[in-house]
Image (cartoon, rainbow, N blue to C red):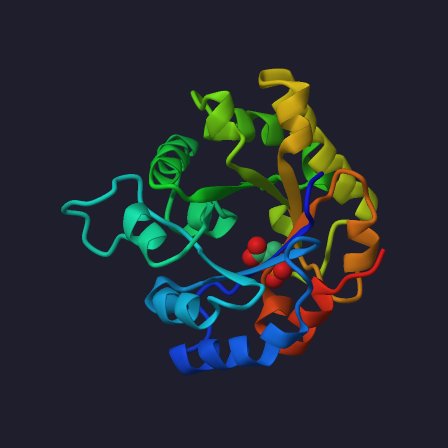
Length: 251
Ligand code: PEP
């Protein structure tokens, strides 16, 4: 059984004080993690204090990114091992903003996936859909090739550690979510790709999330779809009340 996974992605928002206040505001209102798992991806700067504060709560504190080496002369980068050591269980990799503003290629993301797994982190690998459904007509090829490139060379065991997030870039931060049917189609496509490249068993095990303007208004409809196991949420996750509603979705 795939436990639903509700992941907030704060990006470069909030101060350390605000981040800790958020944990106070939400922690008593989150569901049992054995039934619905909730997590916040926060800036590296305050992951440690958040992870400590959230230790006995249902909330996981996770990384927004990490580097593809464990240690070394890489000024400004974040070590996967160091993340793991402060109690971070998951890390987002390949977010479309990393691809766009920091020029991360599939090759680099693939190296990061290996490094994160080596360090004991579970990667949430994002694949976007930069060209847009309306314009491209090539959506399927794009999403499939990204997933294949980002996961290239992983063993079955390693693939079993990941989740995938389907995030059409035209839906990220725009207030224009994909419809539940479009989101389901994208998530289904990713699951099928895992089944084709690996196995039906792995495809059945892996959680596939949808991301792009998810809010308390549309989460119920999205989570009702059979191939959507969770959501990756930017803007709406910044507000404690909205995050509580997202984590307590109803289907
Ligand atoms: C995201 O950053 O991954 C995202 C989906 O953002 P938003 O929910 O704001 O569209």
